[in-house]
Amino acid sequence: MADRLAPFSFANRTHRTWAGTFRCKPQLYIQPRTAEEIRDAVVEAKRLNKTLMLTGSGHSPSTLTMSDEWIMNLDIFNKVLSIERHESGKFADVTVEAGIRIYQLTEILAAEGLAIQNLGSISEQSAAGIISTGTHGSSAYHGLVSEQIVKFTLLCSGKADPETIECSPGDNLDLFRAGLLSVGKLGIITHVTLRVVPAYNLKSRQQIVSFDRFVDELWPTVWTSSEFIRVWWYPYSDRCVLWRADKCKQEEPLREPINNFYGTTLGRFFYESLLWLAVKVYPSLTPSIERWVFKHQYGFEESINSEGNVAVQRSDLALNMDCLFSQFVNEWAMPLTEGPKVLRQLETIIKDAAKNNSFYVHAPFEVRISNTAVSGSTDTINPDNYSVPHLGTVPGNTVRPLLDGTPKLGAATTPITYDKLTLYLNATVYRPFGFDCPIDKWYRTFEDTVAAVGGKPHWAKNFLGTFDDKPASTLTDGEMRGLKPTMDSWFGDDLTLFKTLRETHDPQGTFLSGRHWAEINGFVSSVTDIV
Ligand SMILES: Cc1cc2nc3c(=O)[nH]c(=O)nc-3n(C[C@H](O)[C@H](O)[C@H](O)COP(=O)(O)OP(=O)(O)OC[C@H]3O[C@@H](n4cnc5c(N)ncnc54)[C@H](O)[C@@H]3O)c2cc1C
Ligand SMILES: O=C1O[C@H](CO)C(O)=C1O
Image (tube, rainbow, N blue to C red; front, side):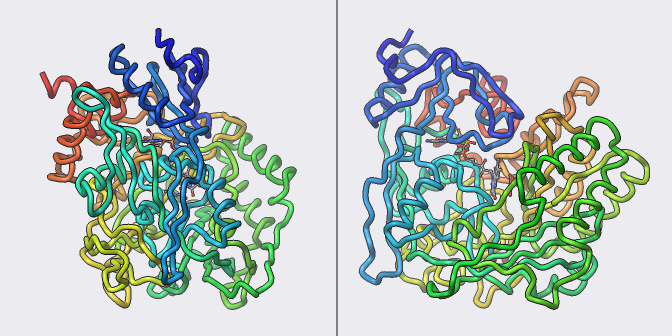
């Protein structure tokens, strides 16, 4: 079929998400080793009229990267090509081949005395994958992870031959904004330049607080009280775990957080076994199991007035965490100011559902923030142009991705105010030992609640959306209906521009692999639309 690709492609490779939520058997699984081989694959795909699905580490838990045609993975296209240190010493721009995994990059940077400025809960993602779905951390002083991108190289299928396009705030700005969150539908990101900073350690404190005290007392000041902050809510325990971290002096001795049985392999297995019991045998036991585990893992006693569980770690090790087991996740972004109201609504929904034996949720429920207020300035060397009032943050760009689902809250202010911040609520449902847990009822109610305050989903995750033309009886539990009906009202001209750029640079639809996901979510015109 495509002999030219034989040295770096496989005919019988199964592709699956990290969580094992979805898997597929593409006709061809391509792992290019060089830029030329990447280009050859695009030429062959066009010649044979095949579509190409890009995948990084498969950490997007939905059908986003599923395809039965050709899949391309850049795991072995992963070198660091250059590190350009700025004369101020405040930052450096590192250019990498886009398949490099974040954990590989952080190790190389650490050896160079450098570090990534902001990360999510893990570092398994590829450099291209982490930016292509809007990955975020949790900070009032940082935006999406893609805020750190200075430029990238995009290989598009093009009209005749494939075209290599340099994208940055000063070069092809529209394509840059489209490619900062493209879900792989625009072309192949082959190289990424990331703005990094001198290596830093984070001193973190983890405290236990009641849900009531967190929502009623701490909320008005907590979100700007540290550079990094994340909250895990345990609904059946009426408790929150409040984790906050700030840069500390390099001389401060490193110190691991105190761990207990539940941080051990046996402890994780024990908890997963209890969850299996709850999912497959006695769902009504879920609240008791979650409360029992919380009591023995953290204890119900509040520690907000003491220093809590303190640690001093290398930045990436502090920002990353153990995400436990295979899971569905459904995360939506909304104005932070809506937080108390929405959390109280969800508290009532979760408690009523347990009382009525309607559905059960798993813990923790993640409560996080980001600051995606952007200045739009293309000059990111001058701190006066930074959109986010920074604690040493040196953004690679201060432009907004066209399909960024966080609320548009105007330019950032100094000091930061809550009306400029985005709240992320992430409903994780575990799949103990790979056994599915019903999610439809919970996710339907959750989405109706957050959509009512202007929420939009994280594009990588297991959101349901709304099929207005498919009776519920024909859908499987958790099946993605898609968000096509709302996309125009949500993204307007930005979506139109994304589609125009997509059709201009990929006229044959080479990158419309796994088209179903893109169609039901309105990222591309449905075939019926075109006809
Ligand atoms: C355990 C876990 C923890 C997570 N923690 C967080 C978190 O804290 N915050 C957060 O926001 N998200 C989080 N995520 C989601 C994750 O960051 C995103 O799903 C991310 O996109 C996955 O990156 P990946 O390399 O696995 O890419 P994949 O999931 O394989 O692909 C993601 C998208 O990128 C596209 N793509 C991949 N490579 C290229 C390329 N070279 N060119 C163009 N497009 C490309 C794919 O087509 C796809 O659309 C988490 C996920 C898991 C499973
Ligand atoms: O998608 C995600 O998974 C983890 C939670 O387990 C996380 O923080 C995400 O975001």
